[in-house]
Image 1: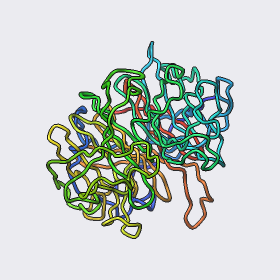
Image 2: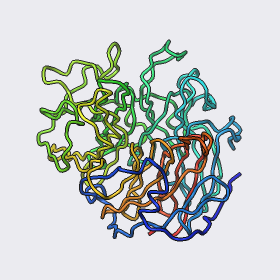
Image 3: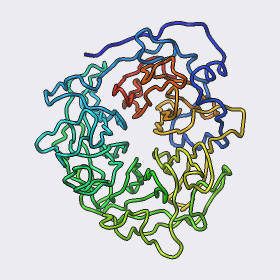
Image 4: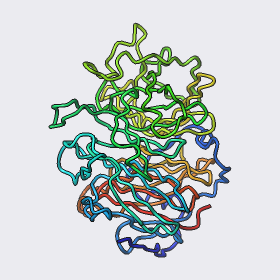
Length: 464
């Protein structure tokens, strides 16, 4: 059953008061860089400054600005409409894909590990490894965001974190896991990308795209001009992850074409073994190199540990969000901690790579260097909004928000999760993080997940 709520009214407040009152993680986090870089290829954003302060939700689920409404589309533990089982846990990355007659196919990841969560139900023909608990579910919505169907889209995968949409209207779901068969009870190797058709999951089945590499995948972005797929790796320990590109044998060939294989390469920035060492926004590196991965299947050695020659390869801590804008691909390093092995510390970076020029540029650095406040530490999923703005899901400590950013560098709270995981009176209460923020094809609805407890929302209102 879906539920719907209006945001309540409360007295207006200044932007600084709003930000300072929405969570301790915001304090002291700022940025340096040009936000116009982040909106390439989108409509002009006029720096409207947001939608005002968040209104407390009487139902205690989701605070939104005045005039906005949310609908709960799905919650973990409820029955799937298909009758296949229960809605799984750990709602993560998501995409809203266009369907026929104005319908929307919402494909949602479930970042389940080997125990402790509500698993994605195993379904014949859609299950890769029956011992794995992750996968995707798909919701079909009508033009009013009524749920027409909810079903398993792929099962038997592990730790499905993020991914990305393809130009031909499917979803690439990524396993943030590289366990081999026999580890944690798994019967097959993991660490792959799988293609999911939200309209008809049986068209894509449960086939790993092995040529795209076996590693701790996070997100992907497809160059709509060449068909090259860019991939981020969120490795937890040093040596940290790499930034990859996959050159498909059948670029832009449509559903199933990525199964034809291709070549996987890793990015080498000459003279830069660790991206965290670069702290100056606007720093530009020409002549970026792409080095073939010796063993994409990581049969004996994880890719990031393989021998890339005497000049090595370029690593970065917490490579997460990835998207295509204009003629460039953008990717996020959520943070870097020197105590954990990074070359330097930062609160988040956004990098831009221009394929035609083989140029890499650091466009944003999150950190306490200016007076303009930015989202709390650990920016994670990033979504380009249809009106020209940017939505950032926060994945840090304390209160959790979806923040909007304009071209002018203005930051505003768009949503706050009110579902507390610990006592709100605790010294350091915790709320569930946001994930999977995405927009409907017509731009009228923002869909977003609360990771724990798994909840999928549809947010409508007076979007600029």
